[in-house]
Image (tube, rainbow, N blue to C red; front, side):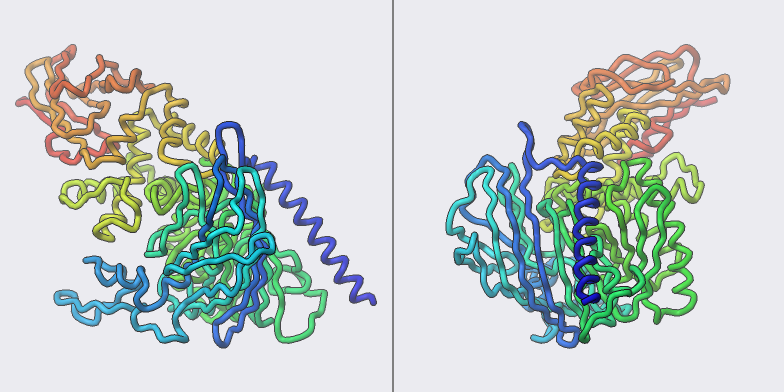
Length: 626
């Protein structure tokens, strides 16, 4: 009787904690699903799965309460079945076999570097190694639905259209098999982690003001519907789980979450997680996980999950990484916006570094410097740049990868006291190499449709980073810092688009910036300015590239003194705050520009900071004879 009362009390406490935590997060996030000028869909998930760790198969049920906040009548819906990508002949498999520079995660080179022979890992999967999600039944408000499976997408014809403002319930029974670890999710990765469970469940596709986004899973990343998740995972009791959400029954579970005070029967445990206001749910599990925790001052509880079978040196690296992670969480919260959830988990798993709701998967056997500087700093930046600021990664990949790279490099410059004039120099170099290669494609390209993987990587990570860093050159660093904070304040828990970041910058700087967004992201126009001529006190500049920019110049005079100048671009209808001498603006239609100085000139340097992405720096400097 006492045992029953304790279990009921535990459930009651769990409900109270969920209501409190949900309210707390909602108050800090100001989640809005619909206003007079904005709307987004809502999908609340209830899922229960039972995992067989011997066959790597699982059985599940799912109920989605779906609210149509759009002004449109919906006659159909779509689900993502991501695990179906890990089957011979899938779109991911075939695309990887046909792209000239395939991912080494998916394609193995069984030849030599000079004479490669590529072989698909997916194509070789056996029936018990593939991934799949099989839908057994699907109901809409208790009425059976017809559906078809097209690769990684489930196409569903509704029994009744969903009217604007209407909420419906979809109930699904499904089975799944976890694939051998190849890309992001899977079983038994190279470091021996049993289960890396991302994109593991039937996930409703997003519908927004541009329509449906039922993308096939070919290799790139994601776009999901905001909502609340209630997930129960039943698995062998020796396994430790880390991932999205707040564990509701820690005293039944133990395993580092709390002291186990409630005994359970059988060989399995059911873990109950609740995750308010997220657009995904991921988890990892292994019987050999160590589980450490560290509370961030005025911030969330950090959880660290890593294999206890690693070497003592590797385990010590995980220990040393923990206080660094706490400092990084505080730094990002300060420069972008406060992390709104109550926990964040860093989990050894997956095939590299990858961000998810309230957690990051990463390799765990690297050196400390590599884990922290090149993996964790980037993936933690993704908490803000795509998870909280949930842009469409399939369509605007540069907004999440590029912005995360920007803040990653900024944070590492701060942490290691490097104080570089241009902390993003690596990204500038990579972008300029691509721009001069003849291989560049505009950032309006869909992430999966770049002709080369390396073109995608440079366009998204590096040119996307340059977009933000160079925006600071245009509007001033202080205005950029304010823009980033305002962008987070206005668009966290929403689906921002490219126009949203540029309009935010316009409001902060009081400058017109649409030209910058169009030229830099929607074309492959390049920036190339030259110092054409110096004649005593007169400087002539030339615009060679198609993309116009405001210019910062440093003039060195014959007497050894220097003077900085700023030339606004006329299209900006203003200029950034600067201590430099302000010259008249330069209209982009004029290919040359001339100005006078007060003294005889020794040399002229365009953009000594390196923050303007000029594709030919050799013509940025000109000196006269002494």
